[in-house]
Image (cartoon, rainbow, N blue to C red):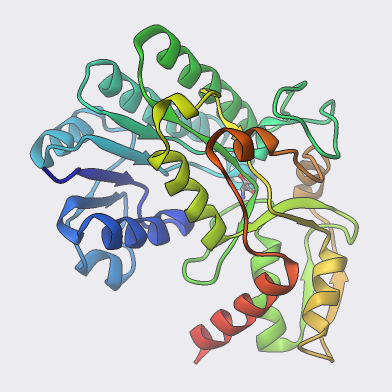
Length: 316
Ligand code: AKB
């Protein structure tokens, strides 16, 4: 019998591309997309879609029962920059949605759960370069606190109740199909749009703000790889470090200049700079590589080429 999958937060930056990939793999009718708002026409028309508030427990249950869902990808969350502006709302969304899904897992209604964590779980006291899988974690943002707490709960539900929940700590994800909303790493997407439209960009992060980043195709591959891996290979039940590339706004601007010679960048750091400063510059993801065979494909050059092509196309 086909595996029935529900994606909550399917219209967001990662959710949109993840939904389309899962539909390609499992058949459109087996992958139910849901979000609090409508998304792209492609997503809405290619398979089942439900308007769903991720904090509405009875409605989640109703949808899980209606479609015989056995697997959930919980992608709804308020990201770092937005969460600083609405801390309690962010806490409620990020935590309540996770509890609703973990409880369904505990009741045996779900076989597998994916829940994304983030590099935001780390803080200023964490080693900044090659941040280890297990290390000091004292996040200073509401988003980071919610993700770190979520990791603890995932591990707890796995250890106590055998819930098969799997998670990765996403770095900044770079893509052109759906815009991100309210993250500190969003400059690395805006820069491509502005470079192609106006040949200039003012970065809200300082020129030397190095952060871990990843091209969308790699993020989708990691998400699917960890969910497809045999359960015994998933040894970390909080969340896995995941890495691909690390760069600063200045390095990214230099790479873009190889394609757009007159591109100019200036810097006006705002409140997001202090968030960036509290996060690692690069990540050690050897546990993910060893346990379930994670490998990235896109380096800075390849990612930049793909982004310029993709954004150019979207501007036509
Ligand atoms: C953000 O910037 O908030 C996100 C993240 C790193 O989780 N992109």
